[in-house]
Length: 609
Image 1 (cartoon, rainbow, N blue to C red):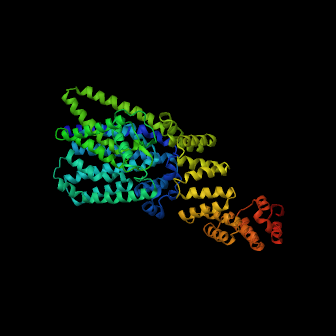
Image 2: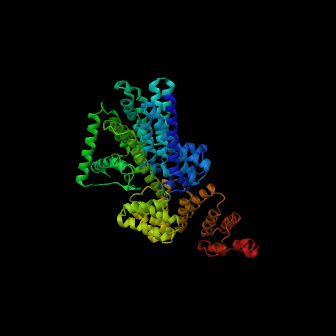
Image 3: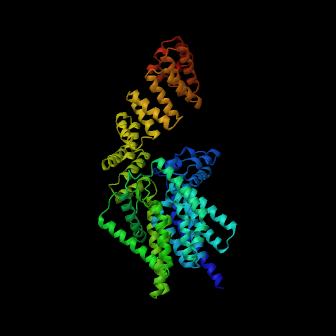
């Protein structure tokens, strides 16, 4: 009979977790893709456009796109595109589904390892409903969080099953989950150490040599993925070198962040996206943070026998957060809510088990404990509901961020991107300008403002900002290509050619760069080079009428009227109909004076039809 009651309780709690978690995040189905990495990760990523093709699958394992090696995440996005196209709603709901499944697995794994149903359910509820986890779930780009954590928790449960019955098959299942997690997000390089913590508590295994030895395949996998991730990140420019960012600022940011995350767990208000890296902090804050960390670390060791969950929970938090602590700084973030998606599990364990122990020692009645837990969970769910709404689109997200930190240049930049999507270019330019005012070396804002000015027909302004952005984007093909195009419009064909040649070195075969370089060569009367480039473009895009038109311009400038007329007729056959452009183009002046053109015009011009 007790077993049946226990099973009914587990079922009721599991259903409650599913319903509440799904309800909190269901409205993300109406949210947009963000102009905040969703573009380069999903909707504007050409490698994903065709879905699960053989080429796309191969790309997933070989690309360093976004300076990351995350083939598991790419495969997940490819599957979404295959099933749903580029409708943002289903992509969001897949994140929600993974979050719900992880919540259930966490509940099940903790219950299996500890036998404690209510405390395991509390940890799962805190994980599912905490506002700090909204970023990971409501942001499509953070699929790598929701999916990798699903694999991580599955690996925990598989590890427990293997310790109960140590068979080769069960160990292979553990390895499979670990590999999937590592392929999805390299942050899981800490998995072998986290399993050692599980050995300490709740499994109570103590033969350390054996424990480390049995995890040697996992350590090897983690080391390999960590090395690949570091190389790819360094090559992609997102891993800061010591010359760019010294050890002092890294330590300051790490110490303060480690101390602030637990405060955010307890009091999760004021959360916002794009928290900048702190280069300095008040000495008092740094000292207080360090004292707090040392005190909790000491207590976790001092009371490891009496409260092993404290040792487990604290060091789970410290170790799982280490890859994103800022010591090996990637990107521009100092802190981020998504960094706590795995790490808070350890702190939630301390809350659940420590709270139960404290209530027992203080002899607090069970109804009072249940009431307090219910109030806390309802409050968290309420704040989470509000936080989910913040992630609806770029405007809601970054207006919210700027309300909390109005001097954040990156937030102004992403607000500008959201304004552009809504066809509000004047406001977007003002947002980029504000970011530059706050930080004249803010290269992302410089690039975006340069691109916007180029679209508005201001090549001089565009060049000024593009040139400033080259400090950070010296090897960015799109910046070089756009800068070359703007110099061409200004009539500076030498600089145009130099930047376009560099763009082609960085991105061989780019048709836009080849075409514009050909036009720069044509302006410099380098006819052979122009024709060679255009012929290569024509081979890659045989149905493009503009390539044939440009070839006609090259032949006309050389005085080859017959060849120019043939190319022009080919362009007309492919759909080129702008006779006004033909009549006004100075490159075609010699052709227009020829009998070949007169014959062509009599046959093909609208008046002759």
